[in-house]
Image: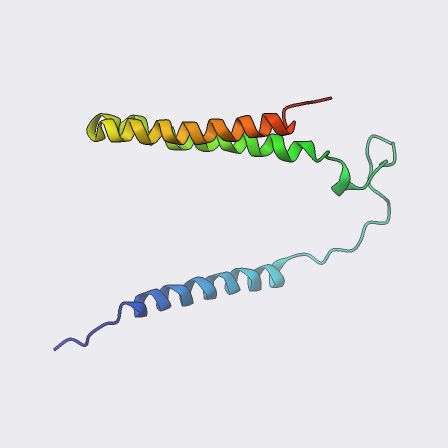
Length: 120
């Protein structure tokens, strides 16, 4: 007679294997990586010393542009499978897609009103 297996036992085994794998990769990295010493000279940018810190060179308006790009990227990510299955699903799929596009359009109008698309 077979013993009853809990639903959580395979999940815990998989979690243990994943954690052990990550620990093994980090251990191998520690053992095999070359020891680095700090650079003796500053960063070189075509012979000109840097004017600002590397983390402060992008203007905050790029954050809004990035969010708009990701919104349109997500639109394409959802529209491709929708196009493949709209014939089988029918009218509910069309209604759901127009609802999704309406929400996306509202987000773009909001970003436009807030000045995210203004460059001056």
